[in-house]
Structure formats: C-alpha cells, structure tokens
Length: 183
Image 1 (cartoon, one colour):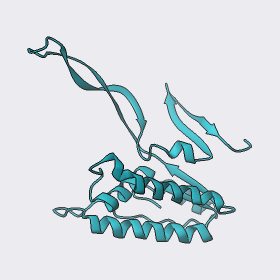
Image 2 (image 1 turned 45 degrees about the horizontal axis):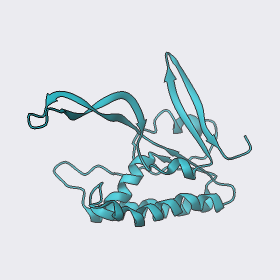
Image 3 (image 1 turned 90 degrees about the vertical axis):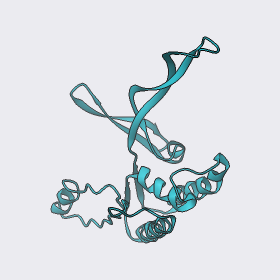
C-alpha cells in the first residue's frame, strides 16, 4: 500500500524473479486548485483499511510506503487537518491506530513492514536578538543538522523489529534498533 508513488525499480525486480506482487497506490495529493477535504480523507482511510483487511487474509507480507503518509490520512480523516485542536483529541485516533497495527501480530503468517519518512530535527536555542524589556536573549528554533523519523511516534513500541537504514560516509548500513523476536 503506497501513497509515495515510487515503486519503479522495486516491484519490477521482484516480479521478474517470479514472485506475485500486488500493490495499491493511492492518490493523496489533491488535484490542482482543489482542497483535500475531511470527507475525501475519510474515503481514502476507508479504502486503505478495506485493502489492508483484504491483504491480511490473502498476503504473506504487507508494506506501508510510507506509514508517515498513512498516519497523516488518518489525522485528516479524524480532524479535517493534519493536527487536532487539542492534545486530548488524539486519544481516540491513537487508540484506533495502535489497535490496527497490533492486530497484525495476531494474524498468523503475515509480515508487516512500515516505512517512515524522515524530517529535519529542530532545536530551541538562543538567538542573537535581546528582549529589550528583560535583557534576556530571545529563543529561536534552528535545524540541528540531524534527521529524525516522522510518523506515528509510538510505532517503535509496537513493532517486533526496528531497522534503521543509514548512510555513514559512503556506506549504507542497517542498524537494528530493537528486536523482540528470536533473531
């Protein structure tokens, strides 16, 4: 299940290997001049859930590319925007999402992979500007230069194995963040 629109070079290689791959790409971005409404987000979320539940019965592996985008669809469907008005608004959404991801663990023979996007990390620091009333330096937000994961913040608690794909120098590496299985 993909909202990322980037399957070339991935699916073709596996199909050429003789594997049966079924994928569903969803249109997430609104058409030019059109706004993405809460109703459209609800319809998209329901389509994703219908296809997901079908895959749970018929597939051996399900991949979400990207979980970050699917989480955003769920937020739009719940709130009409990517953000709720109040932190308390998230309780119902988080519980529903938590249960959805946890449910896969009870389905025998299905692997579930979730790919998260990365985002810039922002840190609070002192700016060069001084508050004339207090004499204290004003706070500013600056990029730290690091990239951190975006998406559901509790995902690492739910998954059985957490893998981090990193580039150090000219090498790509896979780091195991945690593993609750017999590795």
